[in-house]
Image (cartoon, rainbow, N blue to C red; front, side, top):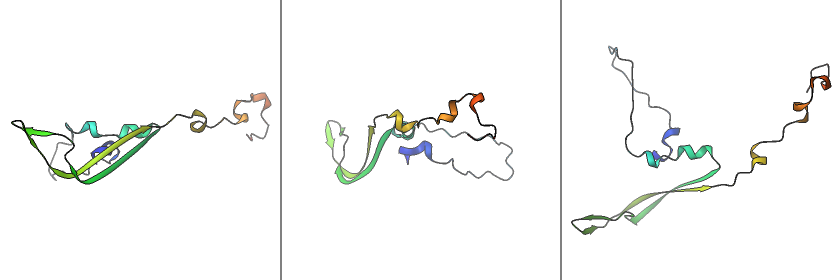
Length: 109
């Protein structure tokens, strides 16, 4: 869920019945670099996948002794797509640019 955090609806929080304070502030300090939501407004291929029973992808050592581990890993991959303006922005209809003097009297486009 952290990968698409900005797309999630805000939580429905309950307040105490006699509470007079109506302010609410949520702060997320960690994991912001995992959020890929902003890339969904760009031509981008986003792949999220899980790999089970794989070794720890980040080496961890304590007192120079490497600690191994096996588990589930989340993989994130972004691939930018080419921008084809002709496909993104359709051609304007000819009637859009005509002069008012060329417009039909009945108001049809």
